[in-house]
Length: 94
Image (cartoon, rainbow, N blue to C red; front, side, top):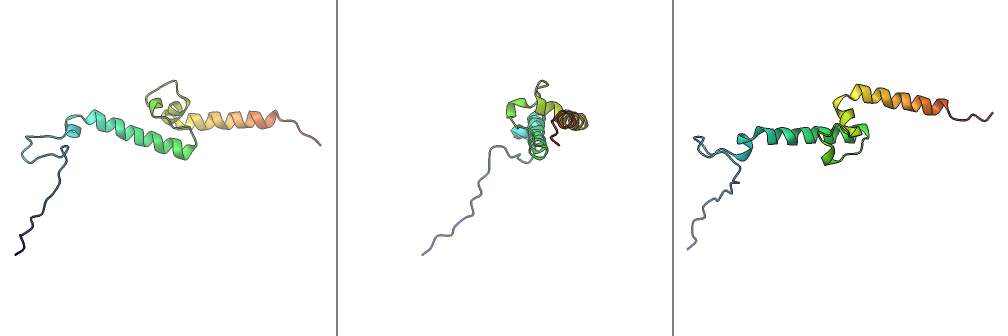
């Protein structure tokens, strides 16, 4: 009366197969995985430290946010010095 239903499992074309015959794209190219990992770390840094996030700034040495990502202690020192100079130069009305 009713047909027996078989379980169907969808597999993506990026999965490894056993025996190592068909290796996934990401397993063959670990540098791609590294780029995405760096992008996630850079995005989290920008989000928590208050810098503007733009994907094209990754690996761009001229970008202010990427320079801060490379050396966060130096970036905090520069921000602190800039803030102190701004507070020092403001006018005081007494």
